[in-house]
Length: 445
Image 1 (cartoon, rainbow, N blue to C red):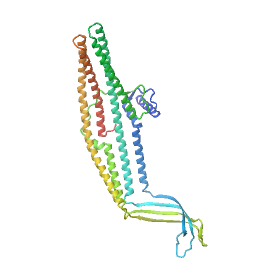
Image 2: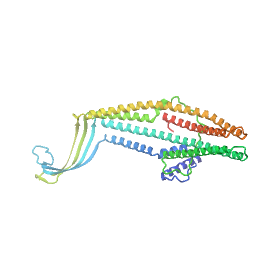
Image 3: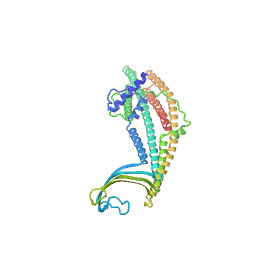
Image 4: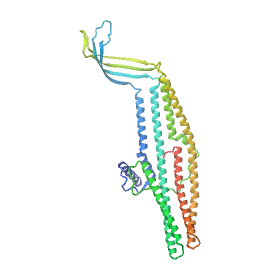
């Protein structure tokens, strides 16, 4: 219970720092990968933009659904005629009426679509599929963001281990330099050996500075993914985790089937295909009759009548209801062109869907090869690290006994550093490859 409370408290502190832009405060000594991912999912600007698009797509569905319901409007109109006009049509032959040039209408107008050739139902279905496409796009973007955060975190862990190896090499060289200095003073070693050691230390120091800069850059990238504003804190936090030992290779037997079944980007394109099919059907519906139920009820009066027979009224309340049919006979080829355009767009999206399926196959194979290659590098480098350390110890002992040269010691030390660096890089690459494999299969966290 205490551990869970501590994690929640740490998470809230990070959110507060992000929201207020306070990043120069004392940082968390350790940040877990899970916390980094959660923070990124909550605050990454690109992801927030996609969430807003999903919200907009939800309103598109409501708009499309609303068009299928009756519409009721209040209408007010003032009409001026060039000649005297009867206020209301006669309801029988010889009926007297009020005539004038200035009439005012106040009333309600009702309209209900009865048949639109499938345009309204198609628009509603298209809006729903479009919302699904945005939701799948958001889900895929979240998965990619999770992978980017994990990849950067593994890079940081690897960079920290490489920096530790460089610092350890510096310490070893400094101890060797102290012994060589004593040997030079005792005239048991040449001064040139001391100069060579200084050159090697200078190169190691340059490597340390470069590694620190790379580590700083990786933290900047991680903070960017997490949506953190402002400069990095003076004291960088650490990533709670370890590259070694590495997890076993995941099962890759059904990877392609799972990817084709689970990938949100594939589902997003499937939804966009459905959207385009509905749009094509709606375009064809524009060539069909449009039938609407229309009704009105309102108050009409004559402001200044020129002919007002006795017994008549200059105002009245009347209503009407009827059915309107609209059939396009000639549109200059506009409807046919729109149908052809929607069909062409449908073919384009279907080809994109096929292309994505081929790309997924390639990504799966590449991810499996990357994991296999990285795990093999780890096994090879693990043995090489132990051998390099033994070789360095032997060359140091030989030099102290006067049976070796300082160049042999420096070469052995350089080889050990390179092998250790490659070892930790391979471990980071393997973790990244495993995360990429999960991404290619469409697995969520």
